[in-house]
Image (cartoon, rainbow, N blue to C red; front, side):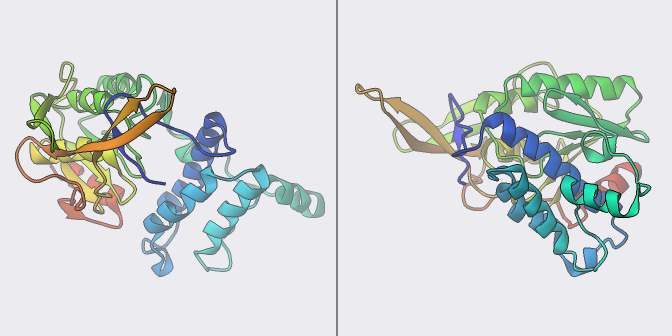
Length: 305
């Protein structure tokens, strides 16, 4: 699925799958993936690129047309570990095991990210010692930037001395939400759009700065469009140190044109770029610290400040 930056609206549709169902699948997939990411015994996952597998399997999970198909994706994901022990067990199989062997002891996971996260809208956040960790799922959901601001405020009030903004897998969304989300951390004119038909258009971060705490940002190849603009702006202004993998390099700005017959033509009329310097289109945001263990490395960096 190709992700594009929309200047006015953002299309979130999947044939045969409702937005509500897709969001539900997304939360459950992220929980299953993060369990391995955070708790697996081997930091190299037996030679498997666990971050790359997230990019491969997550779209399949979100596109599943039934619960059975969704759980099948998770089973195949866990099979990639190849250790003959780690498996994902769908509810029906868990019931059969329970009937055959009785209840097995297990650790309850209630909610996403090992049950430790709190939520404001779709924004997840938690305090890890004194490091506040925020996960921003997209820049398309209504009020997502306001929820990000509220989560940052909650973490600072609870004593966070530094922050991690996790953008991994973020498909992007609306330009206005990018500007508002960036305004939580910094100010000023930070971007421009390059077009053939007009002079470059500058865009500022919006809203009062919520925090000046040290900031790390996590990115990967699943970060697209407006999310790339958010990460790139925080990097280019040296507001944050960036960890992870290079983003998708897909920052086309799309304008929808309404035709007389009621149809629409969606056309990439420009590309997003920092206020100075080349566009991220085709090259992506390159991390300051390339890492397959982005979260752990970011935590180590912030705790060493």
